[in-house]
Amino acid sequence: MTRGNLLLLLAATIWVPPLAAQMPAPSRSEAPSANRIEAATNLLEIIMPPAQREAMIAQMLEPTMANIEQGMMQAPQFRNVFASDPRAQALFVQFMARQRARTLQQIQASLPGLFDAMTRAYARRFTERQMRQIGDFFETDTGRAYMRESQTIMADPDIAAWQRTVMMQSMGNVQADLADFAAEIAALEGDAGANTPQAQQPATNRLLDAMRGGGEAAEEELEGEE
Image (tube, rainbow, N blue to C red):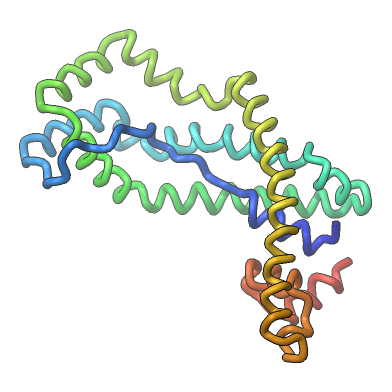
């Protein structure tokens, strides 16, 4: 696998899991009442106090991103690249560090919008009485223990091992799917005519350029680093 293909695989496999638990679809879609919005706002301030939200999000995100990085480093596709050029592993670690920092920065910057949406989502699904009862629970010793420990669940070794296993399986599927996709694109080009300047460039190279957001110059720059 070339370093260019490594970038393509990275682009296809990096993912960020949802931060909030999935909820059932609401039975009605009208805007919630002002009283419900107020009750939901109060509840979220108990569950995730505004002054602690950024730290809580980081605590939930970091273990997952670390598990993804470890899983990718253990995958055969990446081990082969690292074995052929030890410098590639250092570049990969730097790349993942940048992605983790940017992901966290983006999520933290969008927190106000997230909590506005969560407020409306809670208000649609629960009555004022239910939200007060939920808030009462989270103010008990058991509720506080749940909130504290639930933020560390993704760092549990059993969950970390499961994530790495799933990541390795997913990457194997991605490799096969990308090969099939490239073949399908090449077949389309064959139908359109192989003598056009665009068709003379291999489909996989152009696909890589598109995913990187660059063109031939970017490919030449990448090849010059090898």
